[in-house]
Image (cartoon, rainbow, N blue to C red; front, side, top):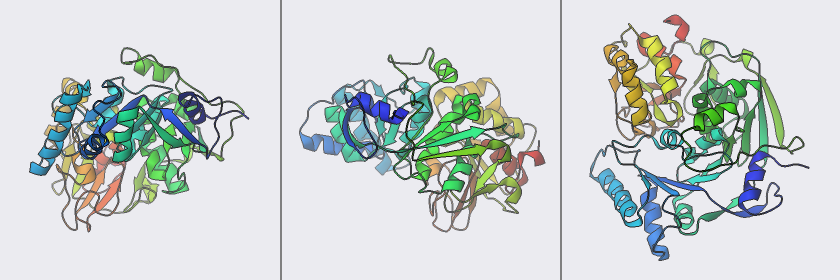
Length: 420
């Protein structure tokens, strides 16, 4: 029997001919990522080991993005630990505020995440890079410390569920809706410690921005990774970006899957995930009347240029509802700059939205949009757990940028068709 793309990557990096699900493999890693919440813990553990230098200063990436620009003294101290470690270790890829972005938007933009690689990060949404054909997965801070020292780590080979998407997408339906629908079908533990392989003719037509969104949320189904085999769209995206040579890998025709699940996307409409789990998704027509206090457009899930263009298309010439505050956060400085050039930022400000420098901010209830007791937010983020965006008695609903923009105008969760 052949191997899946994930199995091939693990076999290649573990210097083995073949691997199979459940097997433990020690494998070299191509890139290690930490942020201002997780890296300081890893740095302390790294120093306890007694190792003087990271295995490769070009293969460690540090991005202060969660509580930055620093919201208080505690977050400033966290960021300082990262900055000083980067200086000590001569780490090439340290991105200070003003040069940074939300990590999972920044790294692909910089060409640091490539097909066929193993990328680990002390952040659960590291699975985002599977959109480029990499085996990318989140790890703990102590594992990050060990990997920074050794350049390798242990993996349990995951089984793979193959998701095949066929048909034609309906208007306003994007990768965010496909993944919310899928999570709604299989549940938040439906792919527990498995790889989700997204394929089919619909995936082959999806933009890289939509692909990154789908892989980003694989973790919300409990998955170890969410991967899309590289193709012409991948290679076009990487042209002029890729920082290293790479080799894409592909599943064999006779690869073994734990399940193969097929969807006709013509049956999928824009999705909204209700509190307090991403699996609580339903089509926009079944949402009912849900008034809002806040709308957030941004995050590592939907803060890319395509997302801002869609939101601006709907918001142009309109005003945000008086009851609602709209917060727009471009994913990186480059995205922010391009949005300025295209007049998108003007549209958001004229609509009376607030635009922020890149930050994870409100997504994790950090800052720049924390909810008070009883408040309700619609967001293009990836999680809506209890207290995720602030007070434990607040509510977070998840959606795509088109639904978010339309809802900011109407003051309640609405279809883009209502305002476009």
